[in-house]
Length: 349
Image (tube, rainbow, N blue to C red; front, side, top):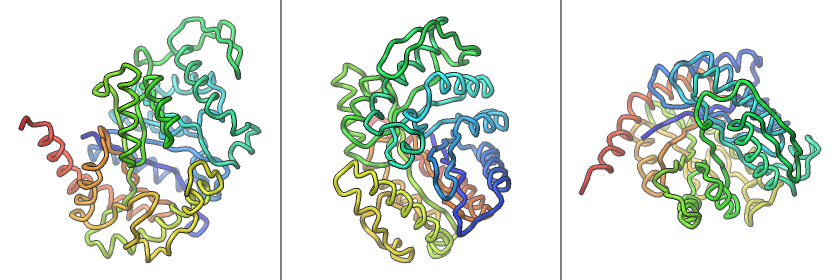
């Protein structure tokens, strides 16, 4: 199984460090991830967050491209409705050139009201902007002279250069939770970026079939959050406050958005100490010793269709020395078990 790492370049007030130091440490860890044998790096976007949650994905992706040689570089996700699709097409093509064809462009429609307000864009337009934006990006990538007349953009004879290295273009992914978003991903022929929801993964597969597509030709990547240390107690003592911050931010943003029934309850996060035994969280934590994390991931992967696993080991504000140790333990002691499990599952009965 392919395994990637998620980086969000966050710097919470409680653990604030100089911003250049935060970015240098994360980029150094990305270089180390390549040495450790991880398959991909995924970057994630938000705006106006108090911890500086990475707002400029393709700028960071370009930096990653120049520091690595093998890792694929993905966006999970770029909030496409907030961007002009031709700007995205040009920047993403440039990253594909800098990386010699290693970009995966994952997009989502976004949800946080403050982000749309900050950009002066109506949240009611997000679905149509995402769908039309994908049409524009793929057209500009593949046509020498591209014209488009749509609801949001009017384009006449656009010719972008350089164009992507990958043909016909870099893989396109869509992230989402709702049935409409999952159907859109399948209908447009995009791979799926999930957060570990078995029902969403099943729906995506069903919609691929409904739209006449072969699910075996499409990727379903799932995201998990965790931290690995020598013992379960040590892992939790190092990570719990940082995981609590992560859940609190997502809970507040999702609660404000109210896109799904029950999301407002996500703002009521248990105390940091209570997270160790909490049963219903937005993300199930993969925190503990290598044995603990391996067991948790085995259960996770058994429950949700996954072709690629994306793990966030860089929790907001966590000491870089501890994230480095967590990465190394995961690569040395957890990853081989996942690989063996994946290979065994492919063997004929």
